[in-house]
Image 1 (cartoon, rainbow, N blue to C red):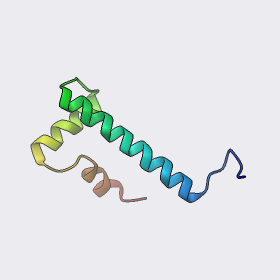
Image 2: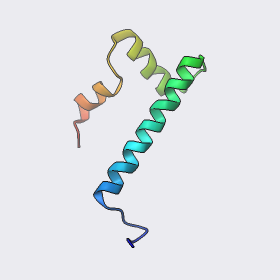
Image 3: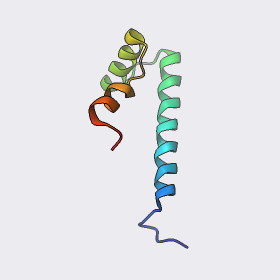
Image 4: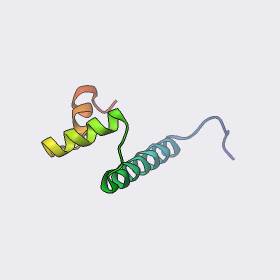
Length: 66
């Protein structure tokens, strides 16, 4: 059994991937239903609609993968 306060690399990757997927599903549902989202999310949705690029792309270009 592993220590509860430390996770392996694969556990970290799985947790981050799950969180990103659940966030994306939530934003997609809220957007499709026409609910008003928070300012950052709303800005991300507007940028995506206007440019056709995923909002994560500018962040990735600016900050990189690490």
